[in-house]
Image (cartoon, rainbow, N blue to C red; front, side):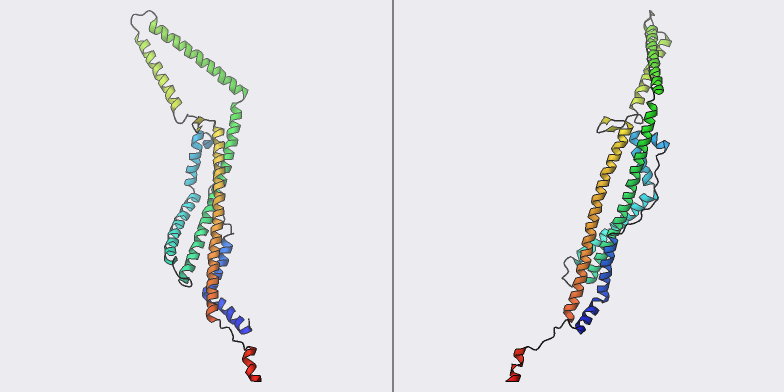
Length: 299
């Protein structure tokens, strides 16, 4: 390659369009590895009010708190941008999908730029979701620790003994009430007294109230696959679900890295296509004199 050709070749690579593609390629290579800062705007706390909730409502309360946070609003805003960018990419892809090589260059450059911006948005969403999941896992661990401490307090011997005494007293009271009821109803009276009727009626209503309390959703024990479990076991299950979500986020992160690689390859291919197309157009190989052509000069 002679000096003049080398200068011509170098100049062709610095044309605005090629330079734009080169910058885009470098930009994609950088943004595919950059780490976006997470927004510190959701600070869930394992408060006493949260601990006192029925275990099956803890997850709903945490999710409700998150949905009201600025972090959730940021995620929704990003999702709207992702949706709009997706439509733009689809429309532009339909336009250039059958474009011959070397044509629709500007549109193809715009398509690569759109894909790069789309991945930036997806990465921001990924980082926010990862941040939210980390905070949720920390919160579940705090809740589990406090539930464990509470369970230990409830398991103290004095508390257990008091509960046992209360249960015995309740049983004695119910036995006495049943005896009084039977006496009032069947103690040789030809007709039940109005007091006996009212007493029996009240007992029936008390039993209905007890059944209603047992069946109330606020007092029903949490269940996993239809099996009643303790509050601690239920929160442990929530932690396991969070671990599953983490695995899904890891898979999504891998997919994003592969998509970023494809966009970088698209940009690189465009750069080569434009550069070498211009080189071919401006390249005229010098015709060298061959010895056979000079033989007549010596005859």
